[in-house]
Image (cartoon, rainbow, N blue to C red; front, side, top):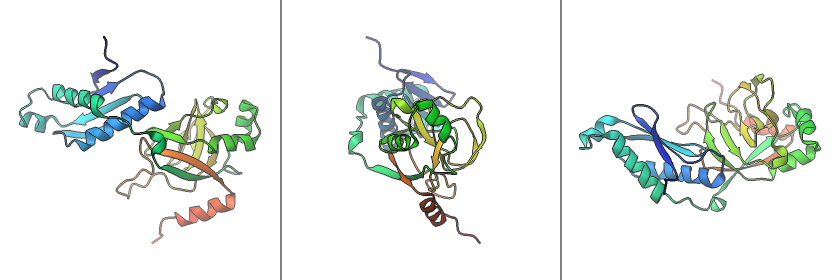
Length: 241
């Protein structure tokens, strides 16, 4: 019987365990749990464990592993990944706390309101309700520091990426594309359709934990007015010296 996963090298000091090639809430929960389990084991030489949709990549330092007596560092780490696959059991995601995040879906923050209404044939109020009533799982952080890829969107909101990416998407913009939703932590180019914006900073490099979310977090948006957006934004404004 073939294994449910494959393990391959991602460089001279990293290994990836991958299973399947589809976006799946249970599979991602397994990957997140494996990464957490690996970090908790105090494994010699382990520097980090990074989950993705359907994989976990571990980065390690060869020298302490060899110093501990293991001559083949890759084989040593392969065994740790196999242990994680067997022993890391995901918790019930529905039992985890939900991070509620304010989002203003009003002008001038809903940059692609007309485009999304046309693509879905829904009224804007229906789109806002559908987007904000669901609890999403953070699959991974990527693309930009702290950019959370979250899902899964309702089928009716599975719009395509913009054919021509926007050259500048404001920080905090909340977008959708290809069945997922995400938040731009900083201003950058981007091709997702923008539904609104959150006044809560998603990335602050001065903090010990600079990203607002981590892989595995549960997130639900709630609508706020433009006035509430400005009030919350003011509370998060960095002190001026």
